[in-house]
Length: 89
Image 1 (cartoon, helix red, strand yellow):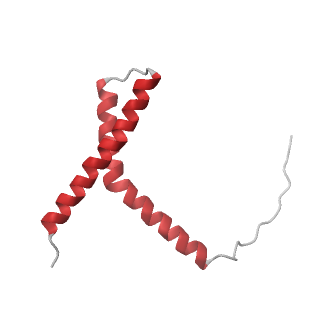
Image 2 (cartoon, one colour):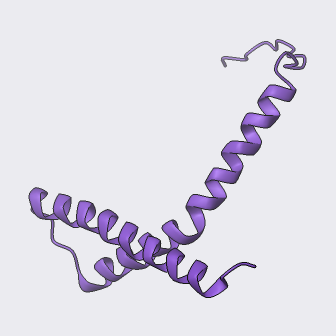
């Protein structure tokens, strides 16, 4: 039987830890380059970082796996390309 409570807690720990790493890299770059950020920009960075870690990474991993499988399946079929004349007027 799956321990759903532990799974959710473990996922949230992963998301918070990864967010801290990403945000520390982002804000250290902002600090070293001397850029000025508004409070709304900093909050947007925090929100987008959390969204990227909880949803986007898994979606991109699925797309990469699907592309790899599709590439292996249709490895030698590129289709037909017809040349067309370019009009340079």
